[in-house]
Picture (cartoon, rainbow, N blue to C red):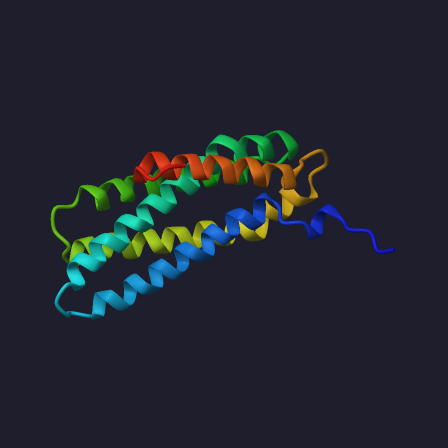
Length: 165
């Protein structure tokens, strides 16, 4: 009878990576809207940028509250986590600028584009370095953490969007 390993079960890294892929799709959609100068394109860009900002805000918060502290305790090389937290701070600054913008103009588009570039860089480091180290760490139950992350994500989504959790 085959035995299942924890590795084959969806874990915290899978959940976070699903978020990464979803946001990447939103950034690609935003890029196509930039070139579209049809009626309503400006409002669509504003709405999509707000959705991106909400998703990234929630994602960063669950990483900072749950994932990073647990990984920090489980691995020796924490410089990657320090860098990730600095990258989060830069992204949060851009998110604030996007959310506070009064006009959807070329500067607004540039901020969304740069945010997408930050996120791409951050995702590569997480995927190729942090997730690898987290999965190799002893005593870190990433499967159980996935449930914790999902529950907190749902709670935050309710708080930020007014939707019931």
